[in-house]
Length: 383
Ligand SMILES: [Zn+2]
Ligand SMILES: [Zn+2]
Image 1 (spheres, rainbow, N blue to C red):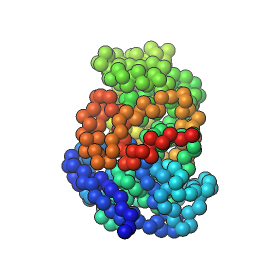
Image 2: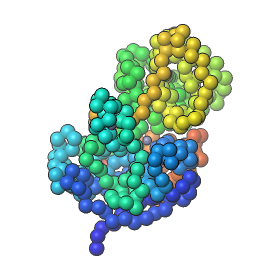
Image 3: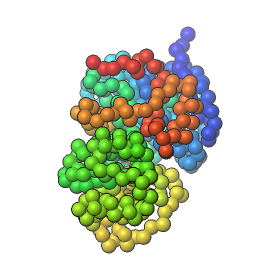
Image 4: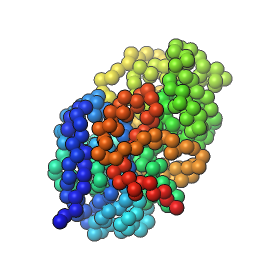
């Protein structure tokens, strides 16, 4: 009998996921099938599930598999696949991490060397999962990796738990901070100490930031932020006036302001405060506000008069994923990455995972929840 695997199918806004079985496909010669080790519930998954983002506008229908922040083990290699993107030999059973989007390679953005800006690339699985190859999202037993997706073998020293976050959250902040040209000795404010914010602290410090200041309203998160490299924190629950918080950033930076402010709250209400925290020449890195039509009232003179800029960054070039994996190898003993993954659920409990992430994600202890389809394998800590 043909081998089959489960997938949690997204059927509608706030609807229970439907666990369905599909035959595991034979990979085409340049593709591969991966057994999913772990898929984190990213903010984007929650936005889609809550209906904040209209999937119809993305040209897709329900009946798809969500989940993209993942890693896995090579299950079946296509006949022509011998190595990963760096030329390292790949065998079935090897742990891998891979990009989750599909740059077309032939649009104007791709031709300009910016695959992360591809005009036709979709981050979300386009095909309903009842069509082959079925396994097009991370909340499933298997995932089908197509030719064109960068694949990197996971070094033996890195646990699957840690590496799953590399292909969305960590790569995103890494590339974002590169795009605003964070320079050695600069100061950084991070608005929001969720998964992206915590990674942003560590990355900013490792890029040579003189000082990292984190703004959040949850004490436990602020404490964790300090362990991820934050030098100072501002607790919104104690300082509820945005002007006072801007003043605090001024005094924490010797009156200069922040050279870079990273927005990873995902709410437009925080933008004006963040922009006011910027120094002259400061760059506002906008990563979190991904939902269209969520707006804020802007005063352009806050930019012009101070030579400030806003830089929006979405996705990352494939090479960033390798840099993210290398970064984790280099710093795995320095920052408490394992605490970032606060909760793990088996695939059949995905409804509970989403409900709890939704209820607590913005205001509680769930920093980043994961779906672990194959519990035994995931416990496996690399040598
Ligand atoms: Zn994501
Ligand atoms: Zn393209």
